[in-house]
Length: 153
Picture 1: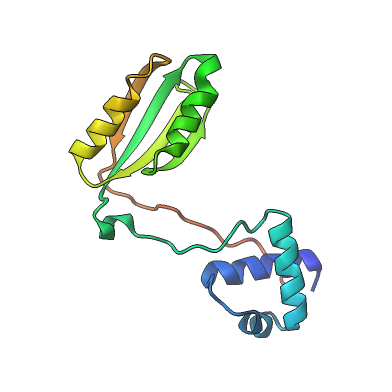
Picture 2: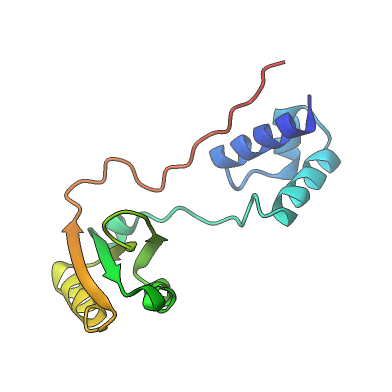
């Protein structure tokens, strides 16, 4: 097994169970615990694996309103706007994008009143030239991760 292939298999195993022990990963991959530990440490050092965190179902916690904000921003103000959005706890994703808008942000809210209040506060910034907000009716897929391709040997 090549090292790159082992790394891909290790990542896929962790995607299946992020709480798997080194021993169980080693057994699944048919390598030593030391090999798994070394590869895992290298993947963390390289920034490929950025942490281990639970997947939270915000809907189950009452945050069942998802809003997609599209913003046109004055060019020099872009870093400040994205920093402000990143710092708002309910914004789960913030992207600088190409196209008609400069920023797309996705937020989770308990209700439309809370969403409306946060968006109105955001839009008081004079550097936001235009905005478009969409409320998600149905999340078909969300926070999906995908297995890496692995060469079969």
